[in-house]
Length: 444
Image (cartoon, rainbow, N blue to C red; front, side, top):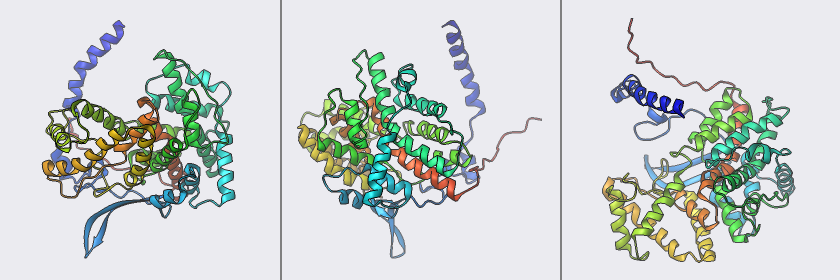
């Protein structure tokens, strides 16, 4: 403890040295034409690669001019809205859409059944892995727990270093199957050892879907309804993939390009996703909504809601950042297609759970916030709710604890990461190595 205090005192002083020597003037970035965050001055991503996996559309050309449009998200040539609508009310489609993203084409009935069975057979962990790895060092940070488990799984794989296409595809399929276990068991260990609660570990059922297994393993009584499974399944499909330019997917391709193995690649992607600027947005929405509930008495009173949202935007309420979380997106402007699809399922779950009052609050904020943001921020391209606006609400209604929110994102996004790893291996043979210009002052 004394050494730690000495170290903390030392770094407290030394950080001032770092601030002095590592500070680069913003003027230099402009002078040398550096696109910070790999985005140009209009916020468009700098083109760094090509992909055949997914596509995001937020603008269209009308009379020679680029104008905002309702957002579109395409998986392998299909609009995600059509893929989900074609599933109907009964079918759970995570496995089917995972096959589409991985293999590049929709499966036949036989191919879908075989892939489902393969995922079910792979949904297991090495002998004593849960006890010896997951339970030995429980953590509130489930993403850290999962990342440690991913890296440790490499020790149980005799061909961990083999980066051939066949082996990488095999490893990706296994990790897609194992991610729900790593998440749920990681939380169970933390819940028992840190929160002093009971710990019940359920084995997965190979005959159940990914969404059904997650709910079954998480709940002590194993029970869930079809509506609950359908809503979770839809959430997982919508979070599976989102273009090649998001931070964790780009990380996947960068690490893959170096020739690294699948486990290291996915651990790197996990480390990216856990960042609050990437995968933790729905937690911030939930914190904001709890704050709004404590200050707004009538969820149907739009004037009262608008007044408090105005205080949030004026940095007088909530966290003082002046942001209404869950509103706006780096790419979409008029609407987020994932939110449009998801909302109808959220409404059904809210009815089943008797949460219509809360749903009304969400809907009123969805209606009021864009107008308020546009007025105060002079934003003319449009502001709309993104999928994170509702996803936390859904997870809460499903009884999923906040510690698992970002992990839920990972359980879905491992599919997209896997597809991009395979595509990177097939299409390119160059390590991704961007340029950084040195602006250091020579001292000799």
